[in-house]
Length: 225
Image 1 (spheres, rainbow, N blue to C red):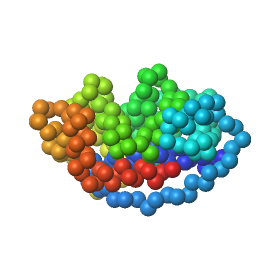
Image 2: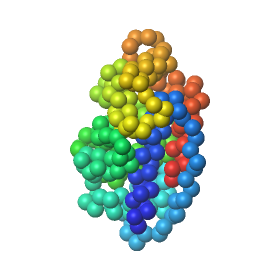
Image 3: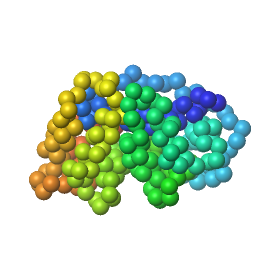
Image 4: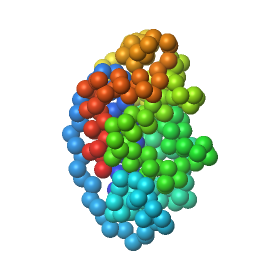
């Protein structure tokens, strides 16, 4: 069942790498990983029918995801330190902690300090099977660190730095010291339609829908599971 745990993590990792390529302008469609075998599991999580109704996964997919989640986190919940440890395994040449912190907060919608299976699978359902607007709104909420309904330059700088730190010295193409500033400025030139210094959800969604690379990146999520 170790493969189930690996596949559960893969969605998060591919999400981070896609965001990195999107921000650095190196987005290239990956070869699709189609090796998910729907292994039957003996344990059926309580509330499976309810989760099936609330997400875009069927019962068998939920079983696989749940077993992988429980194998990695037997207690049934993931705290931030554990989340960071899991995430850092996939980025050994960088420091994934800052980005994992922001991603953890995006999954922890109730701000309880832990991620339950319901939180995990609900977010994955949006990222992998949700509508374009749902995916973009989730990503906006990740960037909107203080949850005030706007993305400002300080927040975007923190996110970009976290992604660069996570990718480490092996980032391709090689980055200059001021690369994060350049990408933040490029982000605001594209997204800040009224030039008021912040990006709203509507501006973010409109700008993303106008960008073919971003639309392709959203399609990549659909191929994770």
